[in-house]
Length: 283
Image 1: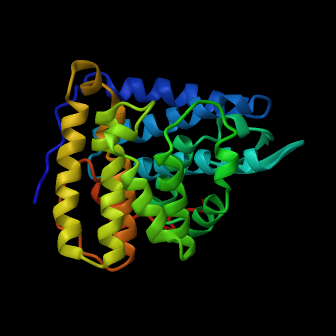
Image 2: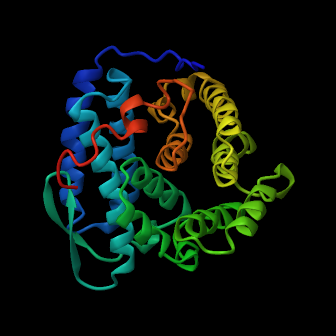
């Protein structure tokens, strides 16, 4: 089954990539002194990955894989900085080890945790996935911003799934129940139902070992993703919609579990899904 990506302008994309890449690396250097920049640096890294996927929809170029790895490294570095309370840490971002100021806890919220975990799943970075899953949700609650309760149960469900904890099923059911529009207080309903809920549904099918249902629900998830990101002109021009990060990440977990993914889409770049570039260079 094929789910085509929505139309997106490609004019000047290469020039934009060049400019944004330079600005991104300048900001990475700034993490030496300003851990409060982490949210912006992670968002920019994800945007660069999406822009690479715009011009390389199957992710068959090394530069796209490098962008994916870099985004993963930034996400993991954020939570490593949040765990450290004094001084600085050294963390590889790109092909270089960077000094990073400790104390990014204010940016270590559940939304950034999900992006960091998705990126680690896509890159098959098991050690980083485990480290993220050992990050306590109590610390996520100390970060800036007010989020709905479902997201904390969702994080704990993912942590329990990866660490094989017995509370996985209960946490997943609770997270799904709390995405009910009546339970939401902060997040927009369409974003929760069309972007946040589908990975929960996919993980449910993965845990049940139901490959056919997984593929059926994956196709629905991408249709919902497409509908959400084309709802208005501003969304349609947002690079965040070019890759379905959550469904892609859970699909990567499914591939590792032996599932065959029968859904094809630019929202799921083929070589990221298949892990074609894994172990190409030190990460």
